[in-house]
Image (tube, rainbow, N blue to C red):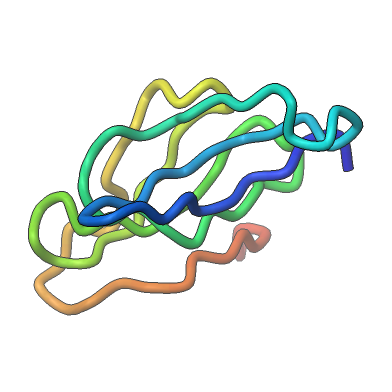
Length: 91
């Protein structure tokens, strides 16, 4: 509960932003800078965020580290991939 990730909506562009909860939004870190980013979801260890992006003109699920680096498309599928959720691996 230390950080809050959310979608900042502005005309023509959505961005993933992280705010320090205790500072009530006084410090903001914008993690993305492309079109159509939304639905950020923290990993169980709070080190990664999964999110949806339409930067490739098709909704895909991406992951990135806490600071916005290492943005990686993990679905890369022609259908719409939405609503990411973290789950344990099945073994």
